[in-house]
Image (cartoon, rainbow, N blue to C red; front, side):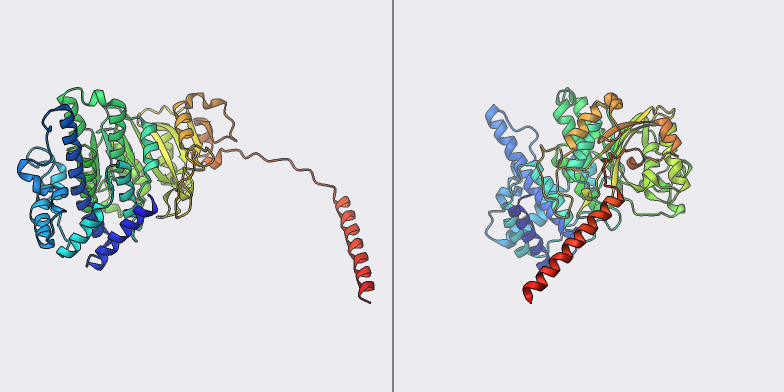
Length: 493
């Protein structure tokens, strides 16, 4: 995010506030709709250029011949604010609510059914359209940065434990899991669908031939591969739009309170879970799924979510999830029981300890990436630990990018390289950034998974003079000072 881009977003944000929309989430939702409309036009422009080069018709156009007036590049040129407002509110907005799937039957259109266009005046809409038109949206990374920056402006961000996951951390976790086209991927607290988007991008980059091999493969990718749950209707809409913009037409994004008794019994459905669930403290026993309480008897959401991941995974399914540090070393009976379950009943693969600044400016909470495989039959031999000290950004509230190629400022490439070669890590000493710890040693330490419990610190040997020698030196210094005072008095006299 450049200073210019931030300034542009700030100006749009201020325009909304001065125009009568003061709810931060409503600002983001309305901005997202407009960014989405703008991006649709750009996507069709790309399709048209490609079709022109190949001298073929546009395949599955977003805007048909009778819908050209709904395109951003067309209506933004209207000189009359009232006509612009009528076009967007009465034609464009109803149009985008029907997108996705055959006849508008997608999960996206289901979530958009209750969406409302709440920009109150033609003057505000015209002003915002002009401002947004100046923002380049061609780069997917830029679009992601815009989302992150907008979400970062919500004063209440993190109040309910909902911390936005930095996209470079999401990418690291996806790269470590290396999804395959055969995977069924789930984020049970998906928010804006950042993990699902990153997984779809990974599959496109590494397995494009397989996911587009035939109609059945493409259908599976678009409709059966990605699953997301959330109970915030605004997040469901934003997440659905995010997935659609990234080329996933009909992901299974559902309105679901993952921990509730109403969704108990849903298990063994997914081969890969990627998540950073909210950690809001405690829940009421009555509202929590009883089968989760059977795995770990607690009210703490951070433990219940780990139990949920184990329930949702198929045998052999993998997970890369973010947990607060307390999960790793908490001393309660529930904490110890859950860690024992991970180590003894399943396969705990690794733990990446992250610095506390990763989630700034939302919070300074210390977190870790937990990596495990559901087996129901044990399998933990050694657990791989990595002490991340730098993620490529400053660890203060500004989170400025640092030198990506400098290991001291960015450990992420090293984490991925060592993870992929972790079977060769046995020879590393405990004083290095990564090392293996045996299951037996972890069990001996009451299943404590804090990296500080196992990491060794190198102490440099320092030789000090004997006390009598130091005293003699002090006496000599005092005598020298006294002699100087005498000489000074003589000069003054």
